[in-house]
Length: 169
Image 1 (cartoon, one colour):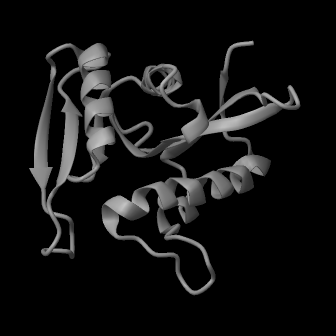
Image 2 (spheres, helix red, strand yellow):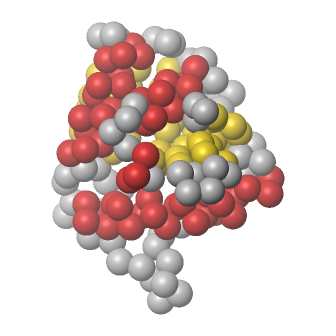
């Protein structure tokens, strides 16, 4: 069976919250992130969902031990309906990486929301940089730019990188 991408249902945001902790754990080495006193990593962005101008997606595929559908990736998007969407969060569980699921998923999410796109990632997140540059080239050919922008309120950090498409896919 192939993986399936579906919008996050109202009763599935708890699943995204579990995966979010993996996502933030992965970023911990890049952003120097520690869990807070309750044992959870930063989740303020996730707490904004569901939101009127947002969308969330999960990728499901059969679990190798049970065959039951299991979530292997999620994405959150803001700016839906505005003409420019932002990939606010994107995560593929480590066991599902390197097989093309991430690129397939990124293309599927972008295809659902016509218009231009922005994709931010941290300066020191080299895996994300390589991934998103490759995806941008596949989606937009040479109709994208990458800029560096200061992290708001954190002048001591390296700037974030932003990929911006200059036309719709």
